[in-house]
Image 1: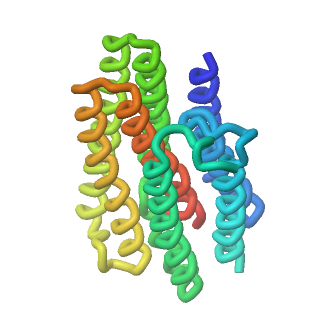
Image 2 (image 1 turned 30 degrees about the vertical axis):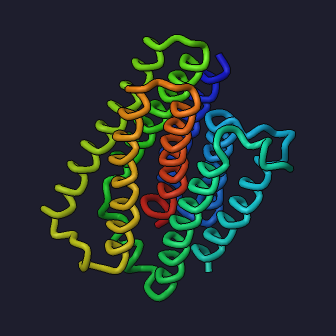
Length: 77
Length: 178
């Protein structure tokens, strides 16, 4: 059930990505990257079993968030 | 935060982290080069078929779901379900590659080669390198399905999820951020 929930979440986030792709502007770009981050977090936590408590999930997601912010920054310059 | 808290083999996580770094470096380089010609990059990117990338995302996350189900079934000792899950995951990978071939063929027919514009150099390098990982991953899934040992199935599924993870990070900068 948990795996199904993660899969459906990923499909919903993919649909959100598709919808956001038609919206121009820096805010939409930030939203697209935020959705990518949510998908990555779902895969890391749900499919790759990186538990919240161990700190390993944050070890992956924090640098990932910083990098996505950098990509956004380079995009809007 | 201890190494033993990582699920599966630590070496698998070294691989996952290094692959993420390689693709992140490529995407960052693309974003940096884009600064020299934002309008050209946007025009080049607009020629891609974003819907095919969206379709491939749905295929790949569904394939990852099958790999996750296979991993769970294997841990429960249900070899039949594990093999079915791995086969469906591999089939998803094959479907992903089929869509990619159609996409590349359309791009090339339209005259969009690797040297058409710097954007397309990054596009073919990033998505082509990722497609090579998908192809390799299908082989990994087939191999772990033969012996069906839980720790090997977990490692194979982890590789597959890494391929999935890289794709969701490639998607916006390559296809969508115009």
